Image (tube, rainbow, N blue to C red; front, top):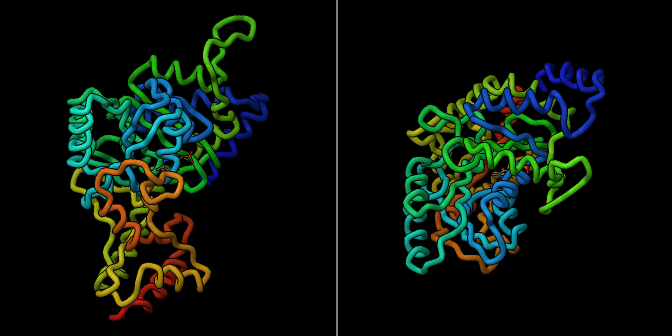
Length: 366
Ligand SMILES: *Cc1c(COP(=O)(O)O)cnc(C)c1O
């Protein structure tokens, strides 16, 4: 926490707005939209809820297909299944680790020939870095398929100078506890489309019709953000730039102190944008490094230091067994070799030195 959150929480208590609506929610939506450059923003209970509402608005339903990045957290794909639709997973490229535009083009061309285009594409911006959005958007536009940007991990990043989340039909962000800024739990849906946001806003409040009594013409959800948590979000938003700067410093320290080790590489920063380095992610080539990714992870764990393998691709998840995947080898390799290092902005220099020493001790050339 930055220390500025308490003032907004206090205001919520003093004005008795302890509800899933109120002045902090309105202000957080406005301040967030201004910060990222979005036209409209809707504060929700989670990023997952934001994806779900975007899919509902786009009419995704039983039997439909939605193309999704395979290298991601399950929350990117699960809302497709909530709607009774089927995800089709697309592999990563090596420049940004995000969706490969060539594979997307191949998949859409094939599906167009078969006369069954997907209802949407969910593009994930992984670990603080954007995908090659212009290329992906051009391909989606060619086939008239709407693009949803999952920018849950990429708040503060830049694509050609702009925030991710603003390019497609809708963008989503997350304020879960592990994200670059947090409300403990929460999300934001952004769009240029006022109708999309208005519909999502209605769906998120149990789809209540405008009538004095309780009347409902469609199935709704309880997805709004609490006015108390929105107060946390307002305080957090003010330190976003500092957080990005600190995350990038942490990355630079890892690069300076580990970059000489053979077989150890860092997630690349693509030429089109700014990587927030929400997490510093390395890959380990065992033959040259002298140990596997798992050796390194276990050595860290022995010192009570938590690190995590890169996301297990969706097409390898038991729950998504049998789903179609286009490519897959790049994501599989990144999962096998990739390790997310401790990257918290509260980490001290001494903490980071400990992490580095454990990793160096695993390398053949120390
Ligand atoms: C965290 C995350 C989400 C979901 O956000 P929640 O707010 O936790 O629901 C979606 N996609 C990705 C890639 C994420 O990392």
